[in-house]
Image (tube, rainbow, N blue to C red):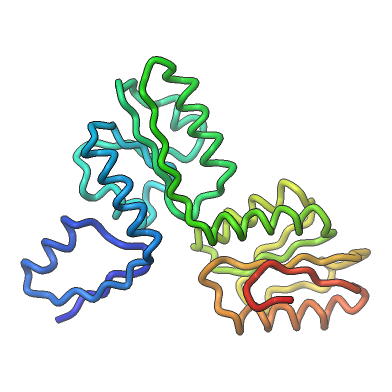
Length: 228
């Protein structure tokens, strides 16, 4: 029997239990998630109480915390306010979290615990940072923004939230059939972006649908791979 570890990764404890059962492990963990695992392990070794910025029930976060006996996970301001004080706090992030959110929460932790040694290791992956930065610039110029990706995709949801800060008309779609003609009324520029794992052919079909139903829209600007 074989167990495949997804791109989100898993803990060493889980891997050890799996191998003890005689299963063959096929590793498909994203290299950048491995970097985050090493960062978290380093913080724990150096005596920091680890705090992860991310979704507690997300498979990546479960993997990042699976080798820790004590840790906290924060995603909102209230989560930080509920933290207990520790002499040393080591903060890392789920790799697909919004950069602005991570920085805000790290700053809040530092302000809440001014006497603590707070160390932050930035584990948000470079492709996520680049995509979010490009999405901000696009959303500032667009009348409408379409974000393509699965409803359960964290980085897609983060893109939706990021774009919504700069554009009032943001729509999250999974496939081309989700695109509605009325979204493009009076729009001159439509922005198109997608979650990291969204297949290129899905993005292409959504773009074609936008051009079909939004015929009055003279410009489609995008930051997804493969979109010019």
